[in-house]
Image (cartoon, rainbow, N blue to C red; front, side, top):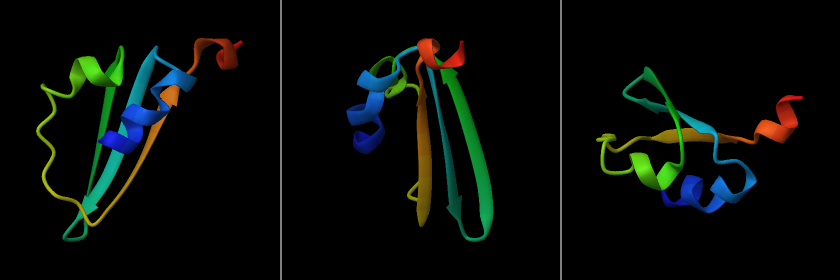
Length: 60
């Protein structure tokens, strides 16, 4: 999650994470800043993950 926290300056409206473990895919979306949700997310160790941060200026 530290890598996604490092990207939140690009957008702090919302973020999402998709990760894979044992051939199962899980997707999580949250509104708000990454650091505000770090304590609420209990992600298991993953083999691979991808995340994004939403910048509201880019949605226009």
